[in-house]
Amino acid sequence: MNRRDFLCKFSLTAAAVGLGSLDLRNKARYDFDPDTTIERIELLPFRYPMTGYFKFFTGPHGSQGRAAVVVKITAADGTCGWGQSLPIAKWSYETLESVTVVLRDYFAPVLLGKDPTDIKGAHQQMGRAVAPGFSTGMPIARAGMDLALHDLKGKLYGQSLAQMWRRPSRKNITLSWTVNVTKLDDVGPIAEEGKIRGYKHFNIKVSPDMDFDVELAKKVRQMAPECFLWADANGGYEPETALKAAPGLANAGVNVLEAPLRPNRISGYQALKKQGALPIIMDEGIVSATDLKEFADLGMLDGAAMKPQRCGGLVSNQRQIELCIREGLMWLGSGLTDPDISLAASLGLYGAYGLKIPAALNGPQFLTADVLKTPINIKNGRAAVPDGPGLGIEVDEQKVNDLLKQSREKKWDIS
Ligand SMILES: [Mg+2]
Image 1 (spheres, rainbow, N blue to C red):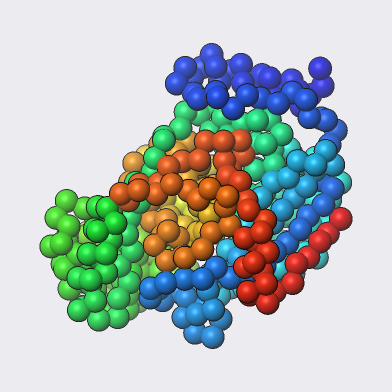
Image 2: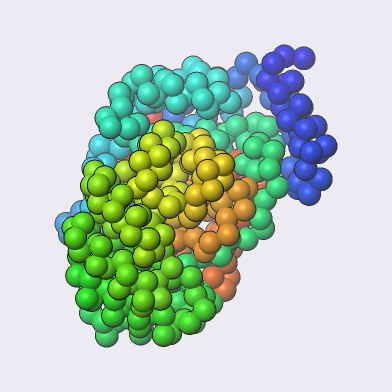
């Protein structure tokens, strides 16, 4: 028995012994060639059509739809894995164009010919191809490869994410509805739409005007007295405003305040945590688990929002969740308006780690198309965690090609 066969069998046995509740319906495949390599990487850049107002999808590029580069990695034995990178130029510095170039010219060439099950090795290769800045370089581009490799590895092993990680999984994840408005009169209809669709929990986009934000929070709290109310400022307050906003939002019924400041305002974060008006959650600025540990040790936060796309994929987010659990920090499940493929990965991750707080995964709220043969089941504000091998989804290549054509983008084939 070679190393990979051994690890595959051992992990299943350990799972069966240690975690009786593990769903082992996906039988491990022992028939794949353990020496198979990454033979081909295809990149499909396009934009998913959208509905509703969301501040990150405005302006000349954003209003064209949710940018994505779908990544298809094919192993020499023909098994393929799907991932995607989800840049938003108005959220971070990565764009559809930069992600495509980095995947095509920097990451794909160093992964061709490598072992598709060695995800840690793939990250080392990508880290050598594009050096870090403050933290991991080009994390959104990297996330596409990380997701596709998890999907491919899971398909080779016949295991879901939770099974590969030897963890039990939740069947469903409760979602939070996003309220992003420019006028207070819009709060009622938008929150009502969420309620009609069965959502019971809400996240609001706040900053820079704290008086507006407090009124917004009050209105949502009135409409949903029992909800988990999550305010996200996306780094939009100045420190002195944030110190006034936090108690105001707490009085209005907010439960957590996420990203009140840009991540380089270290002393501001420390003052907010010390003030203690609301749990301070960081999002922007945390890419690796090292960043999270340093920021936590500096007294900047009470918890962190997970988001595989921000962090270069699932490996980093897994480490961050484990760190939060070890250090008694809150961890929340978030996203970047993730469509289908990345949504499946996030649900798999949050399911495997038993997320307790409603997830701000708002792709299903804002996106009007998918590329799956069977879309992810979302009912009454709850999303089913896909439990098939890999990310647990089946991509419909015709749908991908249609969106590629509509977006007038070009497919890239690296082999
Ligand atoms: Mg956020």
